[in-house]
Length: 114
Image 1 (cartoon, rainbow, N blue to C red):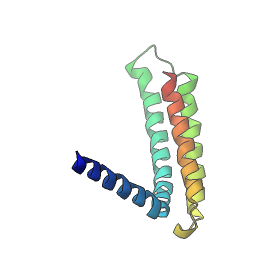
Image 2: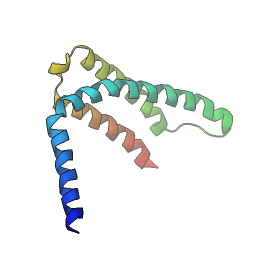
Image 3: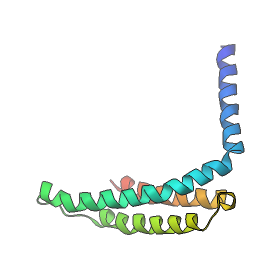
C-alpha cells in the first residue's frame, strides 16, 4: 500500500510540475492547434449537413446544427488572427486557455442539448 501511495504522489507531482513548468509551451501548442480543429469542424459539419438529407430523406437541420457553422468559422478566424500576430514568447497563457474554453463550451452546449 505504501508503494502505491508513493507512486501516486510521484505521478501527481510530475503532472503538476509539467503543467507549471511547460505552461507556455502548452499554450503555444493549443493556440496553433485550435484554428486547425475549428476549420476541420466547420468542413466536416458542412459536409454532414449537406449529405444527411440524402441519407435520411425527412431530416432537416435544427437551429442547434446550424449554429455550429458560424461558431466554428468565427473561432477559426479569431484564433488564426490571434496566433498570426504573436511570436511564441508573446502568447498569453490566459488568452490561449480562454479561447480553448470558449470553443469547448460552444461545442458542448450543442451536444448537451441532445
